[in-house]
Structure formats: C-alpha cells, structure tokens
Amino acid sequence: MNFKLNNKSIARIKGTWLPFPMLLLLLVGGCKKIFELPAEKDYLSNSMSYGAKFYEPVLGRTSMFGDFNANNSTQPLTFSIVNARFGDGRPMTDLFKMKDVWVWTGAYDGTEKSLDEINSKRKKVSKPLFEVRSSGQLILWSSATDDLVPARKPDSSNLIQDRRFFDVKVSNNGGEVILKDMELRLWRERPYEPSTDLDPYKGTVARNPASPQDPSKRDYIRPSRLSNVIGKNSRKELVSNDNTKDVVVYIRPFSGGNGHSLRFKFLDKDSVAINPVKFNETKWDQLVHGFNRKTTGEYVQYDVAYPIPLVDIPTLYASGGKANVNFAYSRLGFGGVRQVATLGLDFSIYREGDWEIVFHFRTDNPKFEDE
Image (cartoon, rainbow, N blue to C red):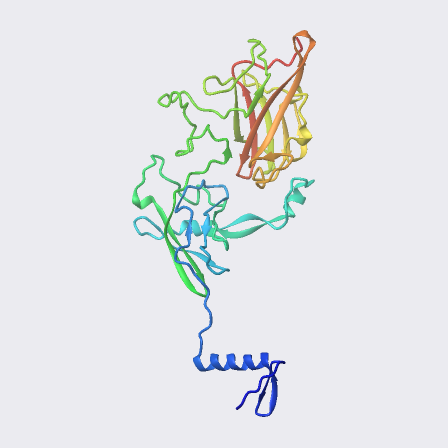
C-alpha cells in the first residue's frame, strides 16, 4: 500500500483514489476494531444529594418536597423509594397504598365558568400515597389521611419504633446510587388553614396560649383583616389580636350540602345569624371561585371545587397560596362622612365536602346604622 497526497487532500490506495476524509474514517474504524474500545457510559455522581433528609408534611394535603441535586449526573435519571422502614426495622407499607387523587390534565387559570369546566381539566388517578417523581421530587398525596396513616404521637415522643425511614435509589446507564436514611415525621390532618384553633398533636380544640393549663379557655382563628367595624354598644372599633378577640372565625363542616359547597355566615354576640345583605359593599360574585350562589337571611353559599385554592397561582380569588375573601359594608359616620368597614380572611380548605366559614362577633355587634 502506498499513499500519495496532493494539495487537494486526495490519497491513492492500490490504484484507487479516495477522498482524504473517507480515508480517516477507515483508519479510525480500523483502530476501534483492533483495540475494541468500550461504549461510553453515563456519568453518575456519588455526590448527588437532597437539600435535606428530614421532612414533616401534614397528612390530608398534597405536599411536594425534596430539593434534589444531581451533581452533573447524566440525564435522564430514574428514581425509586426503597427499603421503607420504621426505626426498629419493620417494613413501612402503609404509605404505599393505592388511592384515587385528582391530577391536572389541563391548565387551570381561575377563569373557568362552571364546576364541569374545572373538572374537565383534571381527572382522578390511582397513585400510591407517597412516591418520588421523575425529577427526584418527593410527593405525599392528599389521599394520605389520618384513617389510613398514623401520624406522630400526641405526646410528641420520638421513639425509634415510631420513626419512618426510607432510601432513594437513583440510576442511569452508568449504574445506581442509594441515598440512605431519609426520614418522614407526619403531622396529623389539619383540614384547613389557618388552624390555630386546633391542637396539632391531638386534633382537638387548641387551648388559649395565654392560659395553656386552663381547659375552659380556647384559641381561635382570627380574621386576616378587620377595619372600621364599630361596636353597636361600645361605639369603639372592634379588634382581634392576642389579647382581645372581639371577632373570631370558625371553619367547620356542615350537614345537608351537596358534597362540594362552601357557605359564609355571620353571628352576633348571642350567636344569632346576621343577614349577609347588611354587608352591602361586598362583591359577592367575585368572592370565591364558586357557582350557583344561594343567598338566604342566614348565609351565602356556593358550589365549589376542592381543595381551595385549587392550585398555587394568583387568580382573582387567591394569592400567596390562600383564597382571599373580603366582606364590607358602608355607613354614614359623624359629620356625614361615609365609612367603609372591612372584614376578611385568607384561608385554605384541603378536604372535599361541605364547609362553612363563620365570623362570630363575640363581645359586641357591629353597628350597621348611620350616625
């Protein structure tokens, strides 16, 4: 074999003229065959990690957690939860029961005109209560409830047999890495927020933090906004703070609904319903993302989709991950000046059903009449 190169990069092999690039391919291919070079493997870092190894989600609400760092490992990666166990070695199986949960198939934006339109953008899918996503993010679904999964002990003990551990296996074509000793400590269900009226360990009524040893005194949910509400008898502005709770809120289920309703009520100091029409500056059609509004002398009720809010994006009805409701009324004050009183709450409800939000004027009734 002899080679002859000219300025056009042409080589002649056994009387046959070949372009120089083709000659290089022949040479490289021959080397690969002679030396049998192995196929290139994916890179899998032994230093990949999660931002934390200990998590405390609340049962009954969909929680996503776990900031995964692949440390430049070759994508895609495959994740799985392995060796789920209690601290004494018993297998932890309750978190992997299969239950139906809502998953979105379309984009919710808060402009939907009916429950049917909302539900056309989501469907129910059977999923394990706890799983890891293709991104490495961990998710505890809202289907993990108190009746299926025991939460931490009411006395907040940290006995090894009650602690929940698991490992995460991460793999690609380059092999696998086991991230060990991740831990879950589950809070019992709190089906709504704010939940300052609930003991997070027992699920019972929370005691007043100022008098924790007195069972006759309890804590309450307070309004998020309370302004210019004047007491009928005291003629003073009503307040709701750590020391004085003129107005409190109850979030509670009620019976007789259709399974997907939300009701708003107002009670005076004698626990008698106040006619909601007295809140004459309220924009009832823009209050919540609800439909088929029903107004009576005791409450205003809507058909709604749960959870509330449906997603964590700003809409006309929600911001900061909470639904925002505002009630208002106006009256003529001294000197003929019109005053606007406001009352509001930022809230979430995680459990589907029939719920009512009640504003209770405990110490004095609001003055609706002009001066």
